[in-house]
Length: 347
Ligand code: PEP
Ligand code: MN
Image: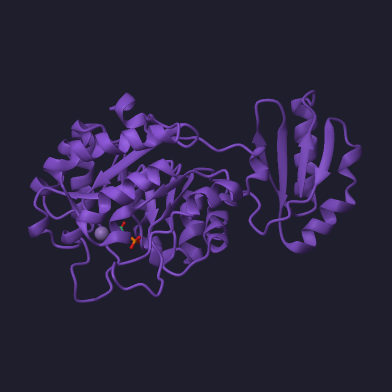
């Protein structure tokens, strides 16, 4: 249920509605727009009935009470007055007109590899630095990430370049360590439906980047976001990273249609990962340009100083010394969709 307040509603009117909703067991999430405040009454299905019975229409300051028809409530476009959300992360904006280029290695391997890559992407105007310290690997025998040591190297990269850090959390037991370094906690494709993990990062209040599961629908992706939002954490970024289809000529099929469709469904920013979708370096630039021109709010891309030597995902990582030329191309494509490359402004 969504309670739309009048532009003239006072703080006391808003608080009175919140109190009523919470008294019958639902949670009130308010979203303050430029003109009006909207209060979402979110709870179990039976709580919805209790909220409907309150007769909130008659309360001072209330304009109207409308049902949120989608199963995802707080993530729905309707809940944010039909407007896109703009998140601010370490001084970088993402969403609306602001485009963020997030770049860095697949995994943190060594001090030299991490800092060389961080310097290269910072110099080329990236908005944030990515790198995994905990890696979800298909094989349990493959390199699993440097863990705590990887986090320490990411902290060093951040201190040196000023770039906010995006890094993956796989296990709730590591949340405190990851939270010390991460400006954005990444939830990997394989964990998109790990609801305990999603609720926990929701409670941490840290910005979260959720990658679409390999075989997940957009509605399932939005329900994953809802797990974070329902904890009162509004800082959620969605990521299209390629899905499984019958096609075997490339690693995954990058679903570009997801960009405009998600923008109809949700107010949350949408970024695209061309690296994991493509699996091959030669495909990364064309897919990035297409994603930016289609209106993505950002790109998260893998970069390595020596991809031939990379411990994982070498064939798809861009070369660090070619990154500046790549970033310039992406910036032009983003402009086609009316987006400003905030990286350049913030860098
Ligand atoms: C990653 O971005 O490091 C990663 C493992 O991606 P995904 O979860 O999309 O496979
Ligand atoms: Mn990777």
